[in-house]
Length: 397
Image 1 (tube, one colour):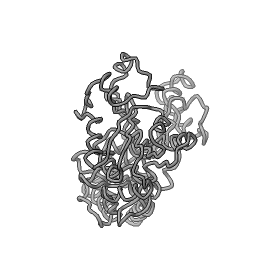
Image 2 (cartoon, one colour):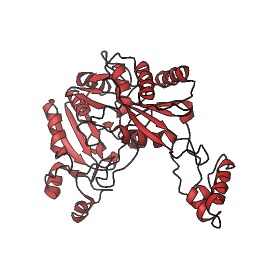
Image 3 (cartoon, helix red, strand yellow):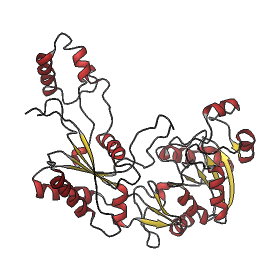
Image 4 (cartoon, one colour):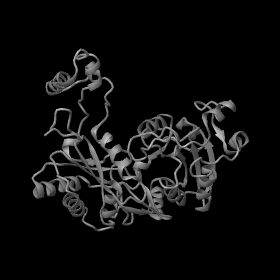
């Protein structure tokens, strides 16, 4: 019988997960329960995805501002340093900044403009252009910024992030100097000790700073790479990927996740005989066309996944075949010709015009975006996503 449905993404409800819970058991049981109660068959190569937040929560991977401060103080004992290129986020960065400030006597906070790395704008491009400011070379002080741009608030949060971040620093007992620049090397006119807080450009930023004469260069991925006073940690990403837990603590990106994804896959195989793929996912990799915000504030979309999710899609563009190779065919004859083209396609379609326009992205990035959009970030209560049919094509029945 011919199948009429292709890819389906489902949010699966689960119990509220707390520190110490068996995440492998909970995910397995939630999927099996959904399968029975909803009458959905688990198939080979279905994808089971778990949001990073519940994995980290089950692991108890948390850190307090005091623990962040202790690590920063040990690594920059002078207490005077630059904090550069952070994103503008109450959830993602504010609590981290408080921990840094608790270790400081003086912080030079350098913000990028007109927006941060993920697209949160301090001002619009038009406003910047009208002021005659060159974002590639101009370094602005706080007083100059206010003279040019006033006290503009974020269009979605209603927060003046300049004032907000300054108050976090001064409220923690440190002196705050606010600067605006996009060249990370600009901070070296003020201090040779730097914590760079960019996410996806951090390695280049560190290299530029060291080459320009910085003495201590840290990224957020260099802080809490091991436990400090009993804190959580992430040996690879440090503070990258953190989220606010309370006003004085953050939840870190999960660690040790490979046994989690492999364990879920093994449990479901034992229960069903089906080989499923499993991944842990965070932010999706997509950009909002209205707010211009790029969603990916995590260091990667998927820190852990089963081996079958490595690589990129290798797909033919059906509309290209229909409009070009088989333009003279229609109906059942066209269907059979396209099915045969799919069955006999090359293992690597790079450079083949018939694949033009397909998305050359990692499978985990594509799937993670689908998962993030399905689960949302609010009160849906579906931290597990079950995707069926993703690896099917037009020939599968």
